[in-house]
Amino acid sequence: MKKNFLLLIILFVFCSVNAQNETDANPYQKNNEIKLNLISPLFGAVEAGFERHLNKNSSLGISAFFVYDDTKDEDTNYYVSPYYRYYFGKKYASGFFVEGFGMFTSIDGKKIYAADQITFTENKDVYDVVLGAGLGYKIVTKKGLVFEANAAYGKLLFNADKTDHTVVAKFGLSIGYRF
Image (cartoon, rainbow, N blue to C red; front, side):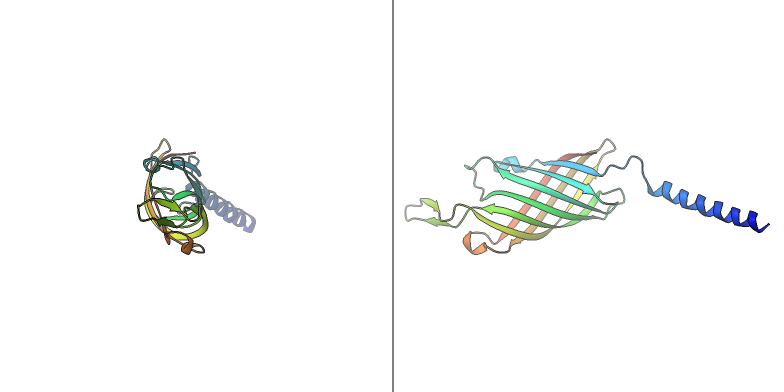
């Protein structure tokens, strides 16, 4: 009798653990995402990103921004920005999110204006590190298409005195694919 009772308890525990795993694991869950910012071409630049979802509520990612048209009034030359996001949505890694980011950036140096309004740059490139925070919203379709809007704000840490800027702002309206 004791053996049958012990066997029944072990079988019950095994079934309950197995049932929990089936509800937590989603076989259609996709953890990787690539995105392209649709706003950056307006500034003569391109921005692309990759994001890896750690679980339902958090992810790590990296984005890269590069200016290809120097005739636009853009002071940033390029940046590489890793980030961490926390999602508050009910679906897997979607909905409203907050993010903390770091950034390695290259910005034009201080501009000195002459009397005849000719502009020249004192320092060609100023390299700096930025820390900041942002927020946004992400929508994911069943087919894996991703639509995202975000804004972030950060502060230059080391060389703000060598450029006309002390802060960096990131804005995005992105489209991507989750795989």
